[in-house]
Amino acid sequence: MGIWSNLVEKLVEYMPFTAMNLVWRMIDRSGKSLLDVGCGQGRMGSVIRRHRDIYAVGVDAYHPYLELCKKNNSYDKLIQSDVRTLSFDNKSFDVVLCTELIEHLEKAEAYELIKKMEDIARKQIIITTPVGKYEAHARDGNELQEHKSTWRPAELKQMGYSIRGVGLRNLYGDDGIRAHIPGFIRPIVDIIYVLVGPVVFFLPQIACHMVCRKTL
Image (cartoon, rainbow, N blue to C red; front, side, top):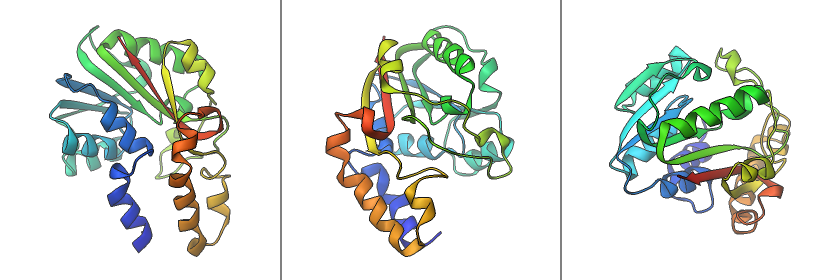
């Protein structure tokens, strides 16, 4: 990872209008427990623990990612499980978080998961996902990284979620502009991603990603 990427990695949680910043700021301050569904390498969990005093449980199917979470102390508890077979009691967590996951499932599976997360949550559900087509394939030896469905703001809005946009569409992903330009130009794309934040925040239909929140 280059100097620029390292810098972005460290600062992104503090940058307004980025998904990572929006997520930790959106978390209900009265919430005492959080379930991160599809926690991946635990980056979001680490950010949340820096900014919120909350008991956090991470769930993911890919064991190497859970090992990274454990190494980085990203969660209070880790569970290896396919998210399609979650087995938590109804209303057992104040907040249920699901970042960049539903696009990895077939549409019907994702709808079923969202319903299940709404049953598990007491106060709030937060979901992030790309807007429209966002090409991604297996990586890190993890076949589950492939994208299988696409989502539009109207779909989540119809389910009762408030929607905020992040970044500009077509900049990222395996088929995005950033992936096909020389490395020394990529910081310009990252800067554009942040600068358009105030506009796409209110226009998620042209955004790269959307942050979706439902308060129960």
